[in-house]
Amino acid sequence: MRRGTGGPVYVESAANPQLIAQAMVESANSMGIPRFESPNGEMMEGHGGAAINDLIIRNGRRSSIFRSYVYPLLNQPNLSVLTHTIVSKLIFDGRSVIGVEVIQDGRRNQYYASEEIILSLGAINTPKVLLQSGIGPEEELRRHGIPVVQHLPGVGQNHQDHVSFGCIFEYHEPQKISNGGSEATLYWTSDPNLKQPDMFHCQVEFPVPSSDTAYFGVPAHGWTMFAGLAHPKSRGTVRLSGPDVNDPVLIDANTLLHPDDLKAAFTNIELCRDLGNSTVFEKLVKREALPGKLGRSEMENFARNAAVTYWHQSCTAKMGQDSMSVVDGNLKVYGINKLRVADASIMPEITSGNTMAPCVVIGERAADILKKAHRITSCQVVEVAG
Ligand SMILES: Cc1cc2nc3c(=O)[nH]c(=O)nc-3n(C[C@H](O)[C@H](O)[C@H](O)COP(=O)(O)OP(=O)(O)OC[C@H]3O[C@@H](n4cnc5c(N)ncnc54)[C@H](O)[C@@H]3O)c2cc1C
Image 1: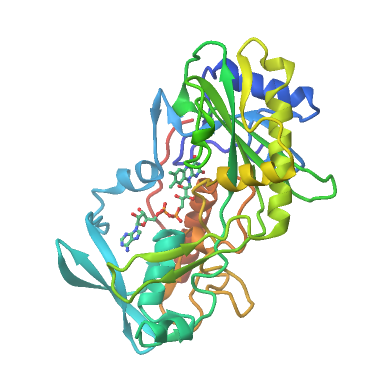
Image 2 (image 1 turned 90 degrees about the vertical axis):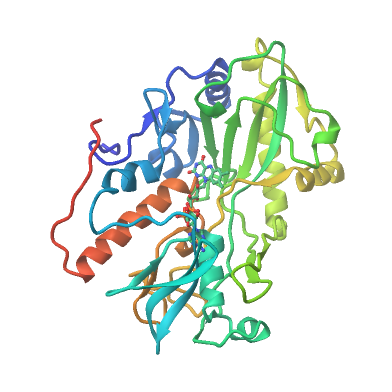
């Protein structure tokens, strides 16, 4: 059995999914894409399939990872959660990190750690704090006048994200939206020789053009298929614009830079068009609004204009053993003592699907590593029934 019970996060299949979500799974099935009970596990580990979404909604109320893991422990005496507090820099004693400098109510404060520091600021801000603290590519640090503590050329490199292209279909009549408006997912493999799905489609129950496709005309009522690349080959960067905490980072996603990603975009959009134009949708759908049948260069324009992020930024401080790796198998930053990273930035390669659950797994693994390293034998485990 793949689905566990009794853990801190309550997950269930979307309750009473809308007709459009059911039609998507049925339409995929009519094209030979198998139907699964859950989009997780088996479906994305094999050649793919279609399924009604798993959601962290219970009794009609959406939860969050903070609610599941941290909130129940807020009264614990050894836990402090500081809001409106921005970590600006790491504090070093030689090559060991001994604390963090923060901006709190407009003032700089320091917090010191008796054991170690774990950065968990996400794939954009973890490299920012590492870089502004002097850990990163020597040349970039020197350019901003930041003293180099450790030359690590991989910090801020290898940026990865799922990119998707919104294909929109117009309804005959307005339809209801439920469970946040996304209730069905499809993964598929364009080439049976691939080991994992390269296509990752997420259905949304309302029209979502990009800022550059909106002017083609968007129906008032319709649904969108975010036809996405599960494993894009383009790699981006997160770099500094300056040494100060208020200097924004420069994010170059380099979306569709790799020629294979453009080819994959065409394959994805065509699958999406075939799916959405299938007779299964006849009772609900009046017409395909975007992109419609286009020639090669028009389709390339559409793909480039429609390309949007799935908000799955990751891989900017990757785990590994090569010269571009930032953390080792125990999440420790190379060349520095008492510093680990535990968030989406440590992924060497983006996962096939949504990144929230994998980030929870990274957090769980980090907890196991810390318990072992500090010989913590007992800790409170909060469980929810289910
Ligand atoms: C709009 C949107 C929609 C998404 N939808 C989905 C979805 O449907 N399914 C899914 O699986 N994934 C989804 N994701 C992706 C998912 O949320 C992320 O992959 C995941 O949260 C990344 O986890 P993380 O721990 O790496 O970073 P985060 O969750 O971003 O956590 C980093 C934390 O650090 C804090 N922080 C950052 N910098 C500092 C600093 N300097 N000082 C102090 N605190 C700081 C941030 O406020 C944040 O709380 C979505 C993301 C976005 C933005």
